[in-house]
Length: 71
Image 1 (tube, rainbow, N blue to C red):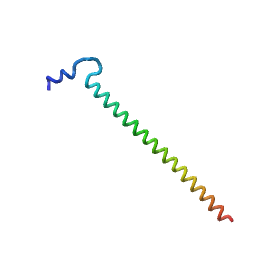
Image 2: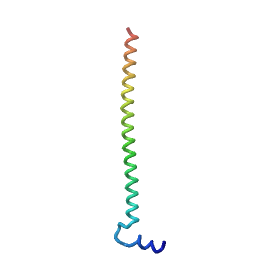
Image 3: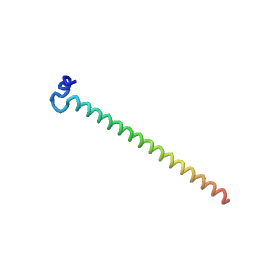
Image 4: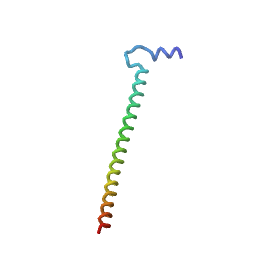
């Protein structure tokens, strides 16, 4: 293993093999986080839209029943 270590730690600038692996893993992690947040935002928007539609329907039915019983 000691013979192979020098091959991976040559100083060829900042982007050595280990730096590339680190940057790749950080990029993957950030991508997963952003995709998860976008999915959560879409789900929240859909739930809010459905909630508003349902409450409007319930309010309309209550008004209709109230007007029907007032006659």
